[in-house]
Image (cartoon, rainbow, N blue to C red; front, side, top):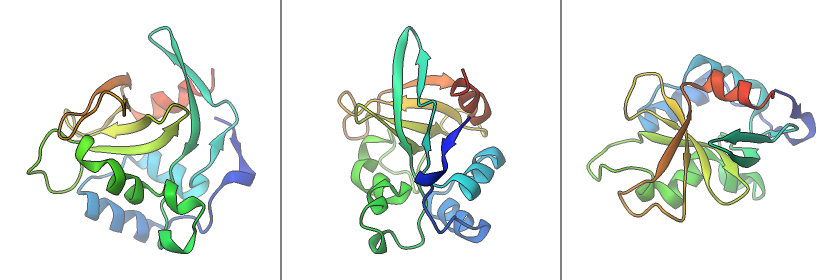
Amino acid sequence: MRLDANTIVFPLPTDKLLDVVERSLRVSFPETYRSFMKGNNGAVPIANKFSYNQREYIIEKFLCILNDSESDPINGWYDIEVTITQIGDRLTDNEDLVGMNVVPIAALFSGDFICLDFRETEEPTVVIWFHEESEEFSPVTQSVAHNISEFFEMLNE
C-alpha cells in the first residue's frame, strides 16, 4: 500500500503509547497494525479506493494515535480515542462493556469508518461501520476482510 508521506502525523506513536491505548480500549492490536501505526500514523493512502460487494469505498485517511489530541487541533479530531468518544455508544452492542470491541481505524468519505472488530475472534476482522444505520448499542457493520493484512492488500489492487 502506498501512502502520502506528507500526511503522516507526527510524533509517531511509540510502543509505550500503543500499549496505553490498548489498555484503555482493552484490546490487543495485531502486530501488523501496530507496525503500520509506528510508521504511518494518520496517513492518507494514495490508492484510497477499495471495492467490496460490488460497491466502491474511499478512505479519507487513517486515524492517528496522539499523546495529546488537544495540542493538535487539526489531527486531534482524527485521533482514535477522540473518534471513539464521539461515536462510542454506536460502536458497541454491549452497554456493560468496559473498553471497546469495535475500534475505528480509518475514516471513509461518507462518514462511515473502517474498524477492527474484536467481537467474534481474538484476531480482529476488518469491518465497515455505517454511521447512518447505527444506533446507540446497535452498530451496523459489514465484514470486508478476515484480518488487517488482507485489508491492506485490498488497497494495493
